[in-house]
Length: 254
Image (cartoon, rainbow, N blue to C red; front, side, top):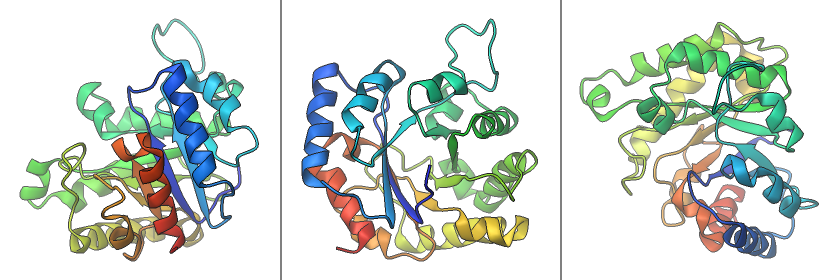
């Protein structure tokens, strides 16, 4: 998959029907008939709809993503989905470590790192989600938490060969409609960039850092103008074609 310098990725979470998916993709394609090479676009439907949505995206340039994967290649892991299965369904990228997976499925840093490695090993681009809880932020632990989450992944990365995307999700902003302030976003994204540079400057230069906390049409332009913000991981706004298209255009600067 071509690695754009910026990305707008829609996470559909546990939403969708065959009919609704068809309408949503048709409307997105009508609003954005041609993608700009500077900003990639992807959608991440639930597992049962991957094959359907792959067909709906054909010829659009919009990438297909999955919402998670197993750290295992195959075996007796009921309910899990292997990376190779996602590739066979035409997925090109995969969300890993999303705040809801950390919170509800109790995924820890070590498991998330293994999932990142599993994705890379089959040619999927991992969208590595990092972020702190409200309690962690209020106790001034944001940088400590983010560095710990990244360090776990770094131990299994070959930065000379691996293509990744980082997504900052302040867990206290997910689904609340309350976005972090521009000052907070700038501070955290700058810190994340410094962590990547400390690991490998070339890797840092080629790795987009997305913002993923209640990003929508109303605040997209303001957030897109912040240094080190290379796109967005969009939740509910990705289920509304006009709003998703507005966010995409914001990162194009049009």
